[in-house]
Length: 251
Ligand code: IPD
Ligand code: CA
Image 1 (cartoon, helix red, strand yellow):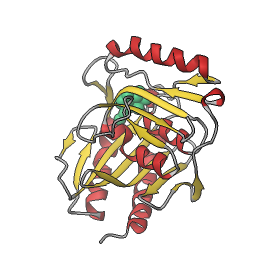
Image 2: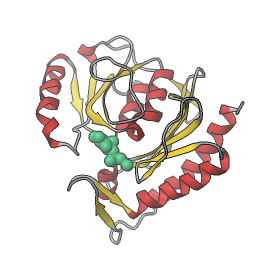
Image 3: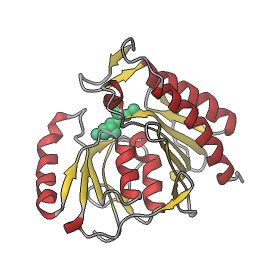
Image 4: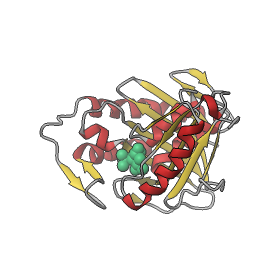
């Protein structure tokens, strides 16, 4: 049996080191490539951080598989360990120097997330959770808010890599806008989930996200007392793209 508390501490140290790469990046000279389309970008820093995480996590738990956004795709097994990693969630924000991006690391046992870390280096905020042990930010326990939709900040993602989804996004968003206090679009799904987890916002939705965007954040929201499903209320799968709806337990 691995000690998840020890492991999460080690992962946090590793992720914090990687956060320095984001803060010290030379945005003027950085190499940027296009992936699935013109809005889907990757920088040399995404690749560099993924490499660092892959090496570091391998040392911490050699038997674990590794799935990373930037092209490392082991298959999940029924009961083995696997890391699902986003080296920079909010790559466009990073390229624009918008100061709102995060590093996300989830550990799965089989198809269940058992530990998750999301680190925002700009604010030095380390969100983390282990299954059954609550959710924390910088050592302090966090919880979802108890505000109803009428008093909610609603976060949404624009599913930027499939622009066909935007019309539907706007329809859902319009409904929420009239029922809630206000809406926000941050540019980092992992941080949107953490915002719900710590009660800065009440709800987050997006029509298309990938497992590395939500794996760690999902556990952090759930351990903070919130609920995370697909937009139809089904359980999230870590084996492909999915819609997502995260909220406090009142809405
Ligand atoms: C993206 C961000 C964005 C969300 C996209 C994600 P990336 O992740 O989380 O907020 O709208 O769906 O893919 O590509 O910057 O790691
Ligand atoms: Ca990314």
